[in-house]
Length: 415
RNA sequence: GGGGGAAUGUCCCGAGCGGCAAAGGGGGCGGAUUGUAAAUCCGCUGGCUAUGCCUUCGUAGGUUCGAGUCCUACUUCCCCCA
Image 1: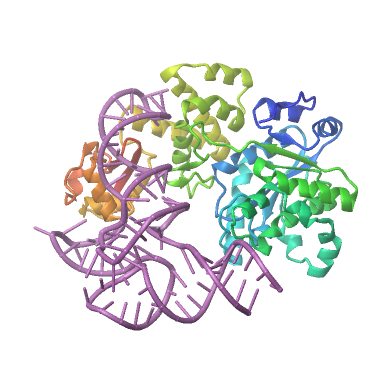
Image 2 (image 1 turned 180 degrees about the vertical axis):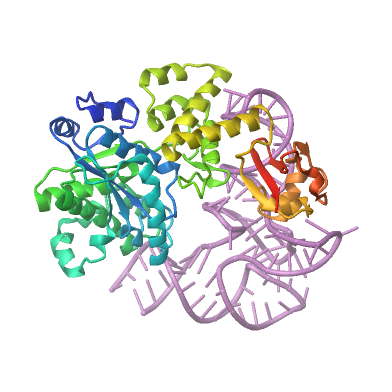
């Protein structure tokens, strides 16, 4: 990561101090602009899934910090670009999503932003825009004449994301090739509509953003800016936001606040400080103190991280409840209310229950789990895959607890 | 348009003389150890009403007692020539 310059503007100074700065197209100019006036900035999110996930959290935090510093954030939903599919650094073309699917995804994604940003008509209120609004209406020939003529194939072929495809003999269709043109055009369109001059994103989008900057200079004679964040991996190299169950989603119906809290609670030691800076709003000196804790004491810092990050995404009451559930489940070993809960008809076989609880994806997998001593019923290891569970397993609260491994607890309630 | 190559275990990469539920990785899961961490070691990693049965190697046919492996056609991708 390049060293961040010394910034004067509130936003950039804070952005860099928290470790979110990776690269900027014109540091000094942007810094000056941000001191002088309210800057309108956008980040684009494609609607490829029904929810954003933790991997997007850094971008959302960027918008939030822009807003807090008095600038105007635009959330651009890629309703149009999703139809084309971003090929950047992917080995395979994304399967094309149907329009109905994209529409459903768009509707579902929007909700997550409302927790992080204040939307409205005020000068620094956030707005949400869908690029399908203009991309869907484009006319091919006039678009080529107005916009396409500014793109040099020679130059596009040298972009890292494109070059990687070509060097590795990977399929690369004309459709995908157009993605970065669409994204560049978005930037210009947002400038025309809202005076937007800054695009931020993860560093993998650098090439696409720079295309937009070039286009802005050519068709609008205006200086646009790029500001990117580092691509996040955990210290051991894993992709941010992937866990056992898959992605850590921001929508509570796809990842419960309890699981979201657990995700942050399980942060690796060496990531605690970095994540506190990036994903919370705790003061930096407080973070420095937490980060310096040694050994098991770091667990306290992880709880603070989990509380703060969950509060941003789901509200502080919800975060507190998740913390309390975790405390009772892990520190007291209790079948704490608030753990993921399913209902089932008893009596039932242990295999069925394990599958119903999501602890195994098939009966075979449940058998293997039992064979490896990985399944517990009310904290007692299950050894017989033929075990039938009836009402006598229910505890005082009328539930029973199934556990896979050491951390995954699910409560079963009789129907 | 002509010629050559590729597609493998529904996560990825990848080996595979006609006897194959298919080598080896990565990833994931579980166990030991631990601090709900990392590292390390060990086990598991297609499904089922389970010492057996069923379904898998791009798609559809064919040869064969038997096909991921051989033949034909098709689909998609890559490379070279035009």
